[in-house]
Image 1: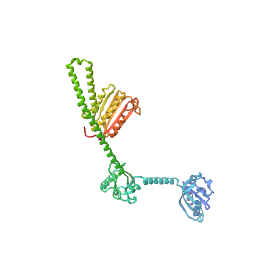
Image 2: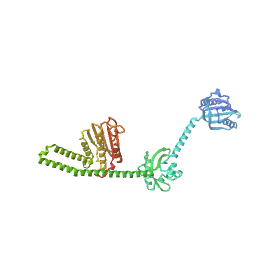
Image 3: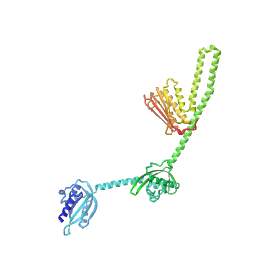
Image 4: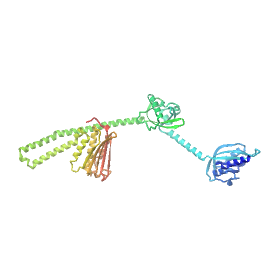
Length: 481
């Protein structure tokens, strides 16, 4: 029976992955199993008879002698974590359990130790600790408040930024209902919303536009942006709230809204004033010089009927031609000042008349207007789009040397889009290839669109034509003219 037990013990020692080593009372190695060979790199032949301190790191010269003294007093050493040096010179982190060895008469004859390699475990523990330290650092240094709440709305934790936001020490918040941080008037609604989130959790990246607010310990409130997240734990769900004080941001947004509103009002008045003045001048041209010149033309016709000899003279024919040309020029000027179609039939009709008028020039290319509008741009929106189209179309006539130009009117994203595309010569990025003096009115078009709250984009390349796009928001529209 004893022989079988000894054989079984020997087999266990031989097959163990741990280093099992025995020494005499002085610390000289007496046995060295295969696990010790694998762990430390020494073969049994290399270490039998040598002192066990060959495994000691240089910075711990007294550690092994101290353990040997304890074992010599009959003490045991259990799960002592330390470092040993392998044959390669590299450190190995180990957990050592050592016991005194006695003979059959109970006399102390040596010691045996079992060393377990904990290098990977310790490394994993350090990585975990570093990760925890990093997360704690991020948690503590976060500029926005971070609050963890359980499914019942009880605060589990809060970071330092939360203390600054709400005026509560974090320890005072833990265990209290999260509604303590919500204005009293909103607590009932908040509790219902919280229950809805718990029943159907999802990420909410921010709370902008929801009019949220926080309540400080002193009872004051502040405008808040609150993002939500969640994660599972053994006891259920933790809801994370990320809170920012956006009082200044909301004040800035309100100020920007007021400035934008003032700008829109100024634009409206400017455009209206300009168009009213254009309309007044057009009416005066129609009522005075055009009427007078038309009357003079009629009188010349009457004079020719009474004096046939005048009708055949060159001077009479030249005078009549000059009168008709003057009337046509004044009517064209009236159209430029204020196209009646814009007021009477809308933007698309006014643009068709513009293309028709430009088409009377010999150099104007073939043209097409695609009207995709479902609603008519009102007030200064329609006027602004018309003036932008007018400038772009005249640029095509004067500078593009194109064979075709397409106009598209469309709407979407809260406004109206106008596209003018030609297949002409295009121009370089500095804008000088289309005009000898380098001035195309492009800056003016861009500024007009930007003042209206929209944008102007120009896509061009030498020899590849030009596309100009304008977008004007619909909310600039005033009452229908």
